Every structure is written in structure tokens, then in C-alpha cells.
Image (cartoon, rainbow, N blue to C red; front, side, top):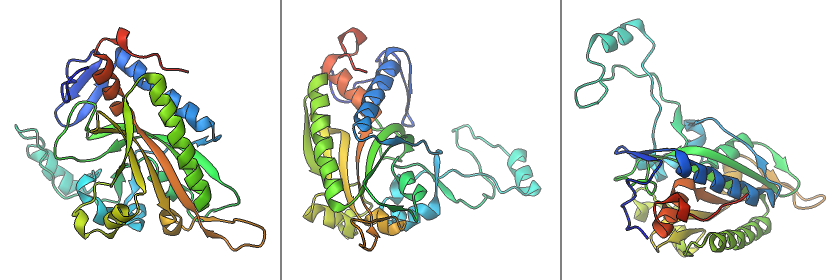
Length: 294
């Protein structure tokens, strides 16, 4: 087993100190096999696959109070104001300094955010819709979160996230999470990874002042699957009707019943972190890695 934070030098891994990894060879193949295994789990619910663009509207994140809860994690795509004089000032100066920093002139209005979590797109996508039964979806995204520090495969600015999401009643979402927990446990045993679930909270900005953080302490709605009691490689998340209310997504529970805001829940897999757990557990040589199917 390798030591924490010593994953540089793994065959197929190229690391950039700004928190981004390039995968190739057997490491990339393992990542794709793991993702196919997560998709196979999703098929157990007949989850519909959806693929979204890399940006999400800032107005949609404002609906869920993202910018007050997680402003320190956001990465904004920016572009220059299209005025000819403004672009001329940019090209006429030193666009990139010796330190690698870009010297920007006036910017166009920022209206989007690089995806911070794969499932956010799903709720915006289904705004205003009514469901007559439980609905299941799966999606994969490259997600972006600014951090105070980075570690190869463990803590990255950009990383791959696979999610399985349930939209339904309170009972349906809780049943989904119970089953998902059991099936992920079986996958961990199959791969020979020593993992354990633990209650967790989201990384809120100024958490002691955020009522959502305090609510998570009182009623744990997030559980992390941890490797070596420190590295969360998956999580289950119960949202209640938070996203249903924000995006006017409703669910009818029976004939004649008035539609109510849908409840939601998700299970999320950090693909690079699963790679980290495998390498820590079995070493950097691909011959020692577990077989992952299908």
C-alpha cells in the first residue's frame, strides 16, 4: 500500500500543480472500467443517461443559494468584452506575463459557472415538470472546484464525477439510498477495498453561519464512503424537497392528490478518487490491480 499523498509516478498519470491530472494507458482504462461499473449499477434502476454541457447558468445556481454556500469553490468561465478597443488593449499589452498570469482588460458579463457537481444540471433541466412515479437518471461530468491545496487523484481542481439520481417521494428517495448503499458496499467487497461509511457535511463557506450546515449536523443527510478513514470516494445525499422547490419540479403520489415538490437523492462517485484508493491499496503496478467488470 502506498502512503497518502505519494501518487506521483503512477504509470499513466501526468500531474499539473494547478490541480489537474492527465490519465493514459492502464490508469485511464481502469477509470473507464470503473465508470462502466457505476453505469451498470444505474441500470438496476433503469436510470436514463443524460450528458450536459460543461457550464451551468449562474441564475440556476442562485436558485439553490450556491453562491452564499460555496463561493470559495466556484470557477467562472470569463471572456473579454467584445468591443474592438477593449480587445485591442488586450492584444497590445502583454497578454500573459512571465509568471503565467493573464492580464485581462474589460470582461463580458459572467453568466455561467463551470460545473461544480454533476447532478445540478438535472434539476435545472427538469424545471417545471411533473412526475407521476419515481424517476432515475445518471450523468457524468467534469467538475471544477477551487481548493486551498491539491493532491494527485485525491484533491483536484477538475475531476470526473458520476452520479445516479432519484426524483420521487420522500419514501422513494430514502429507499433508493438504502439500496444504493448496499450495492456500493458489495462493489467495495468485490474490488477488495477497505471502505466505511461515515456521516459528513458539505464544505460550506463560513459553515457555522450557514443554516444548511447546521441542519446537516442535526439530521445527517450526507454520508461519505471513505478509504483509509480519510479519503471520500463516494457519497450518498438526501436533499428532501430542496431542488424540487427551487425548480418547481413536482410529484403526484396518488389519484386526485395535489402535486407536491419532488424529493431528490443521489449517489456520487469521484472517479479519480477510486483510482487513488486502488493504487494506495494494491500498488502502482497495473498487474496488481483488481479486475473490474463489465
